[in-house]
Figure 1 (cartoon, one colour):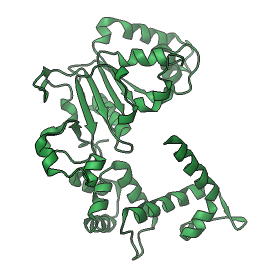
Figure 2 (cartoon, one colour; figure 1 turned 90 degrees about the horizontal axis):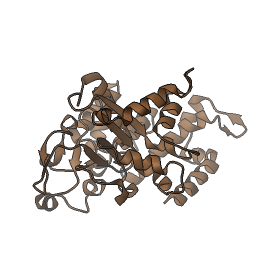
Figure 3 (spheres, helix red, strand yellow; figure 1 turned 120 degrees about the horizontal axis):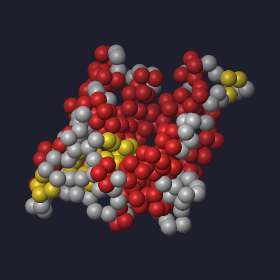
Figure 4 (spheres, one colour; figure 1 turned 180 degrees about the vertical axis):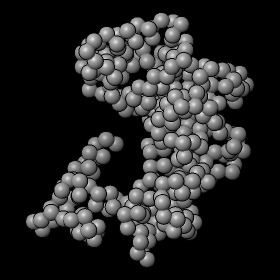
Length: 331
């Protein structure tokens, strides 16, 4: 948290005419939404600072919506927020407490559901007082004086969009959470609805800057020669430079590189071959975890690492077909 993600940027969604003139709508940076002008960037610590919006309205934000595409680091941003609030006193002048609620934990819940139920299931399930702690906290948070000094961090609205029906047990609870006076809500763009209510500030997570890509490499890889090799690899491939500015893509590249798939002279030259190489190395990891057999025997780690592409595909054929079908149905 201190080293890898302390420069994660936020960018206002609206783009000015000058931005549109300088950034091609067909570029990878534009499609992945990782390129913004400096005047659009907002430091995390300044999220609740008084500011003038593009409309001319001056606000002190209390409700903030943060959108971001898959893999850009929304949940990591939530972890960073909790870390800086706890360890560095970020926003301590504005809030006395911060409550992080990963909304995906609400999926599939049944029966009456409220904040006390959530707190008990997540934090106090093993306490001897049964639901005493969670109900006491719920009552306290319902007090208006506490409510005004409590920040709710609601992570991943898109993950429970299917539960946004009056017939589901968590519907009323979701409505209560989204109506909190102090809240940060994260979501993929497609998971939003008019029912989320009004937000003072609408932002968007963007990927790493080129400088942050290098910082990530230096902090996550111990071998200096490996870092230099990856940097040279990226320098010669502008398209892949844009791709790895998405944190999860950069992490996958580093994993695959260290696993050995890029050590030969035949390195990927397109995004397609890059994805294929990353996928192959991830499957090799899963072959070991799943204790898969090949030609009637379990494979040692060294044997798995030496597998050719067609051998990997043969071993995980059923799992791959399942994931392909699952992904297709989810579209």
